[in-house]
Length: 126
Image (cartoon, rainbow, N blue to C red; front, side, top):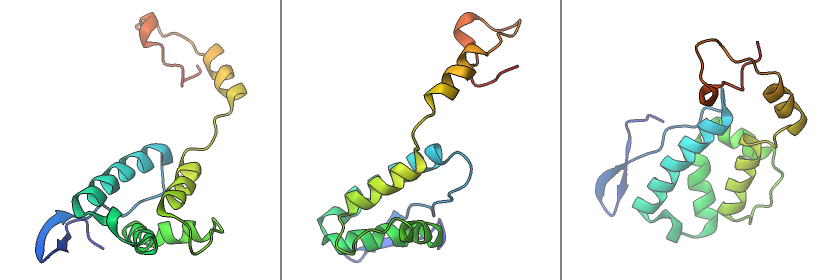
C-alpha cells in the first residue's frame, strides 16, 4: 500500500489514505500521529457510518501487516466494536508508566550549566 494512494468515495477520488503504521520507535508518538490521520480519514469518508465489522476491516486494512499481526495477539471476538480494537492498540502503544522509575529519573537528573530551571531535562540522567 502506497502513502500516495487516494481512496474513491461515491466515484470521486479525493481522500488520502493514512500511512501504514510502523510499530517501531516511540510507539506512543507513532500511534498518536497515526490515530489522528485515521480519525481524519474516517470523518472525511464517513467510514464511521458503515457496519461495525466493515469498520474493523478498514482499520486493519489501513494498518497493513504489522497491525494485523498485532491485532491477532489481542484475542478479541469477531463481533468486537472498532472502538474496542482501537482501545487495545492504545493499550499496547501507551503502556502504563513505571512511577518508581520515573521518580528515580527525576530525582537523579542533573542540571547542565547552560540550562535554566525551567529547561531541566529530566529524561537524561548524567
